[in-house]
Length: 428
Image (cartoon, rainbow, N blue to C red; front, side, top):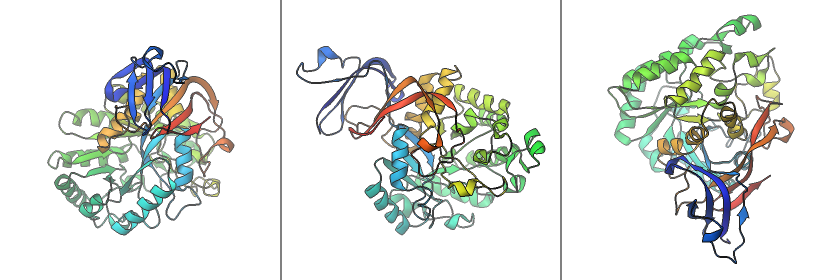
């Protein structure tokens, strides 16, 4: 690999508190050799060719903490190759994959298979999770110790929630003993039973069963109460309502935990569902505009640590059904960054904070050396034209499944190039 020089860029690296105009040098080994304002035309060999970025932005490669990949078992929805290509087009270089596959990621042999497939077919960094309970049944814990030794980075039941308080207590105790990270999808099943959208005016108007916001709050309250005595590494996968934010603010002073939010809940509300738009059937559901605004305030008050795509590819046949029969979830990894940048363009959240929640914060929670531009690290980064317009069209999407919930949405901010280990793997 030839040494690469990138000059005249706006560089943002929250991990290193870097926000300045400068350059980036990638060595022949694919590692970062230098970064910042000291890298300029006067400080590189005159014979070397360089790439003038004309004040476009360099961000560390994004780390997406919640991604569903169809492999194994659902390759017709997504596989490692198509996931990689979609991720790279959105500046994402590292993903945390959910265990909801077929077979489920709950034993060592499946982890070995998953790692081989990921290594052979993926161009990005794959960090797999395993299920909290065997077969996602919420009854018996998986072997945290054995799975962790095989490279499992965290434990979650993905789209399912541990309902049994005694079992959750045991899980937290084991996680504390082993230093494991627990990621919980917060939803009380009895309260959300048969629910499809937020419980409110829209649900009544459409004649659909609603999911109340306190179905989320009750699980968070229970888990954070347990956490006061069992202080393990605990992460709330996604919050969606103001009640949860208020509770988190109260609990932050007593216990250590982290919180994520889906870009969908940050950018859309229940009114966007319109007349039964099944591509917006999500979990957690889209809430009210007041809830959405409370999530933004939560980010600005440092109550939310991570923004995720909640990328859940579904084939079109699974979505083009009645609302009650349609699959839940949306494809979103390639639109994660431009949709997040909308929050910068409308002055909701500062740019540096958005990038922090997409790079260094998830890396810190996961304890991985990604999401930064450290000298000596793999040169995983993306180049972004912050003001270039983009219209989301499903036929132009790279993901195998086209179930975007923001069809025809006009955005501002386009990833023009993505590099992994110094190699350019995506270019507009």
